[in-house]
Image (cartoon, helix red, strand yellow):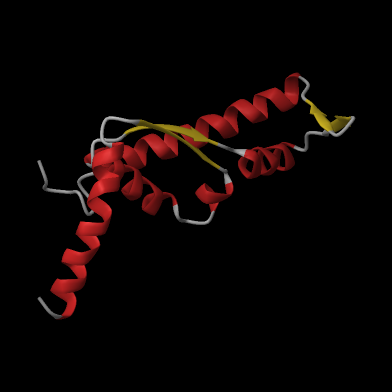
Length: 124
């Protein structure tokens, strides 16, 4: 085989052992909140749908630090630190819950339409 078809076949030959080795496994993937602010969340969901389509169980642990910081600033909440750790009072906790909830809703919305609009769309 020659050209791009040969490269594609070669790629499959090299990747298939890894696909087979990880099928049925669980991947815990932690993603920083920065990945969700840069407009790359849809691409992330497509990649996770691809892993799922390859038979990998995915557990996603999303971060939300930038979203929390933005929400705290919008609410004018003061942030206290003790020994380098943030001390979260009741007002700040309401902002944290709101920001984390927004991240969750955004991800759920992307996942609900992600597979059909991804490279895995139309496959069974």
